[in-house]
Image (cartoon, rainbow, N blue to C red):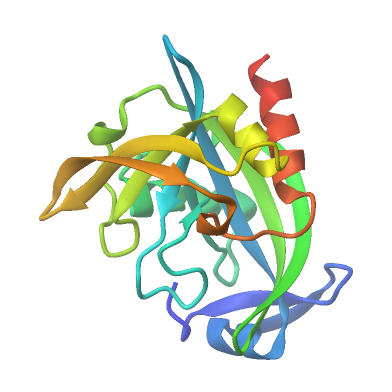
Length: 207
């Protein structure tokens, strides 16, 4: 979403205050709403958590691994409208009913000259298709990788310095195999406890 698009803004108790341009919301630290959908897939090796690599031109967290699909809710959008992020970023056209709600996270952070204050609506999608079947918007999502859920748990708990990840980077529209070693500083930072709560939600949801 460009900085000149309108988003709804709120006070710290999530009471509506009107609208503002996205760029202003980040400059002034105005509370707003975002949508996060984490995708898990299962194969014979286990359950994997899918990360996107953010594009190099992003104003926050460029080139870092992040939520499978995410974005800001535009002014007037309902939370369910966030499902469009899956289509826009990953080429997955799915009904909102396919997502499992995981609750809402309230967090804030400072990145350079930006102040990001978000009410984040969290969702989970079970999607077992291989990563090279995705059709990402390459300018926004140049690569996708998957990490075993057990390895992600160890990484976020500080029990591993690095874990293996495999996936694809898209070059001229074609997926090319990608194998990397992921360290904590390669993953977009989130408010304290975000990843611990996320993994707990996922383990409960998948059984």
